[in-house]
Amino acid sequence: MKNTKLLLAGLLLCSAVTAQTKPCFSTNDANNNASRLFTVKSSLGPNMFAVKWTAPSLLIAQGMRIFTASRYRDNFHSLEIWSDDPVLQQPKARMGGGTYFLPKGTPGGWYGTNFDQVQVLQKGKTYWFVWIEGGWSGIPHDKQGKTKLTLKTKIGGVGNWKGAVPWGFKCRLYCSKLDQKFMVPVGKSCGGSTAQTPTAFSNTAPNLGNGNFRIEGTGVPSGAPAWLILGRNPNFKPISLGSIAPGCWLNTDLFFLFVGRSGSGNQQSSPQVGAAHHVMFPLGLPNDPRLKGLFIGAQIAVFDKGSSRPLPMVFTNGLRMTLQ
Image 1 (cartoon, rainbow, N blue to C red):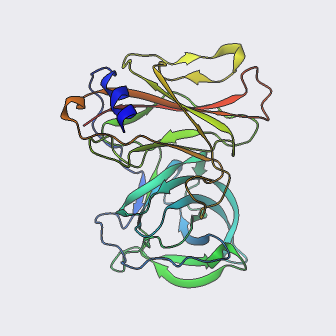
Image 2: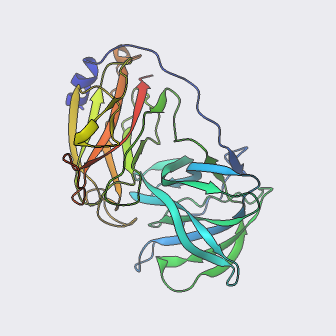
Image 3: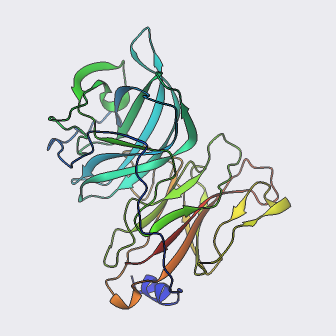
């Protein structure tokens, strides 16, 4: 906390966009009424819950949030979009998704992730939203919800998909990268040796006194060195990295670096092991009113051992935020 406080004290004052982008599609999200039940923790592995959904229009989906909680254990969650098997009436194959982290004690709220690939969802076509979690998570179901969706489950992630009572699924689908009040995504990201596109986001607002504030990345190489780049220039314009990293951009100035490592486990892994294709940097914010209004730019870079670039790394979009 002391190092974070000293770092923040050196950053520049500025203003930022305050609004939070609205979802391009949602179900049962007019309120925060959700089931008080929690999922079970299986010794076989993470649980999988799939809800059947038909796109009402053409949507270019880039992220998703659901209403959940994680009161009893540290937990990684994944949100994915799968194709439909019309014969078996169940999910067929993963199309894309992402992973996020909820620490023990997280109350009910809207949490989610960007997708590692932009999803073009065709009007009238059926898809499945798949939620994967490690157990003891708040169920994103509103019993009084107007929209009930067909539910299939794999407790422990094994065996065949099994039918269950339909959910009043509490879901928000976004056609832009996730943002927060006083935090906006900027610039392009670049992938590497895999088909995934890395992105940066946060599930918590940059509020002073928020000890759980963290910046996360998804769609990154697993088990690899990672860096969080922090900047202080609100007028910084993204810079192409040119021939050393074709297609990649530096989306913030370089004022400070945090070093970390991407995860290599599943949704039941400890924070120390982390989840595959995910990385996070805890940045607990002190409750110091002198820091209100401070600007911070951020971007994540992760080593990609399979890359042929002179600089073998992937880079996320940038984030620009103002402490409140």
